Length: 344
Image: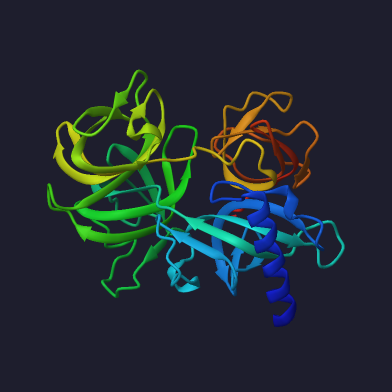
């Protein structure tokens, strides 16, 4: 694709996005009709030049980037890493005419950590290819395929990870709510009451909390500071089962207690009417192909889908890529592909 054409196409995308009010949370099928198909894709970055996600190479030169809630103009590809799970809003193209999308031009790329906090209870057997631990009560698995960020040359790696490391993690939750890490970065050494942590989840049923109040999030006590920023929470109150992101400091580990200085309402899934979508994640709640199941928490209907390989048998815990259209909160799958593991 020529540079001139990329610029022209990116400008058309920006105009369409502005006209249709496309934001950070979802795709917009109205991006189609300019030589490609509008799509929103969620998956792991597996390569650069620009970025490779779910087998599609996305040009992000003219895209808006949001990294851990930072959407400043200076962000670029240099702020992204292999292994990060991102959501890409783009126009995609079938360059070879075989019915498979090959390339795309992105208008928006969003990355956000799944969790950040101290490592505890590290299982570190000799000659292991997999290690497990917990972060803020969430069980985490890393393996030799997990991308360990050592961009600061600190020596952080699969071999050196230790209890007390404060880590930021991106990955996929399986049906048992275990976070299978695809990317992990050490951000600090834990100091109680000082190290910053980040947690996402649904507030307990019956919650109604504002500044100076407390609530429970996934079993963790959240005390909201009087000067906390709740500007991105409707009415500045966390309410019944609201899905939120909490940033703060861990002040106690028994019971786990966070002093929150910022809370933001988050979308738990892709938009209910996102249109064309592609999603990577673990299968859960699977009964049989005639029933809805979930991939990365998203409801999926695969009764009319093509499978790759043809012999693919779905089951809980299987990692897949699902492609189709999201309407009324259901991803109606056209294709379901098995994601190969490092040892496949």
